[in-house]
Length: 253
Image 1 (cartoon, one colour):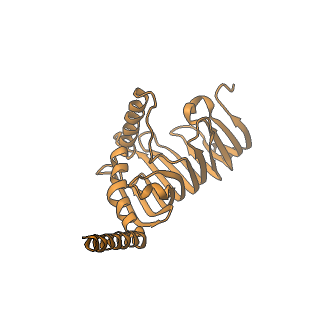
Image 2 (cartoon, rainbow, N blue to C red):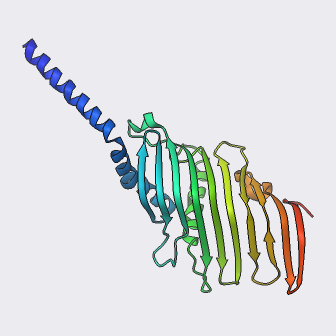
Image 3 (tube, rainbow, N blue to C red):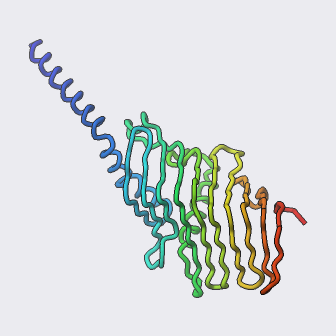
């Protein structure tokens, strides 16, 4: 009686050891499958948008996503957002228990193209509405609960933003963008760009050199501080004001 039990225990132990070894060896492939089939659909549901990802590499403690696009609703002329590479660090130990706990996110090669057409349609309004509903739902819960997919920090290494309002004939282009934000309460987020061009629907064109925007995400309108350098305003052909610099903040006269 004892011998069969020992043999059965040895077989079970060998099976478990082999299974753990296989999981360890194929962790990357399994992790990539989990990201593509489980995590990304959850993000799509939260954003109300479709996500396309070219490559997914999963290592112990980090995930690399390449060629990421936020496609948006059907009928959009072009993607609202495209990223060359996203690096996500996560809790490796918790992943063995089936939990996805994100630590930090870094982004390289970010391109945002938001536009509004002359008929009022756009490639961003659906996302704004979805995020607004989620924010209202969170406030109704008094901010309770945790979100394991919410990163502790976000770092944008390089990027550019293009805002085009075809309805009013206005454009804004921010180039050489970098940004840093922490989820820690009270932390200040910062956005830096090397140059910018702002063309309103009517009025002079504004160009800026290296500038920095600092803001507390909890109350962006009241806390924003915008440091401007090397600005220029083209009043009309042959007349341009240059050397504009300083700080713009709420309450400034």
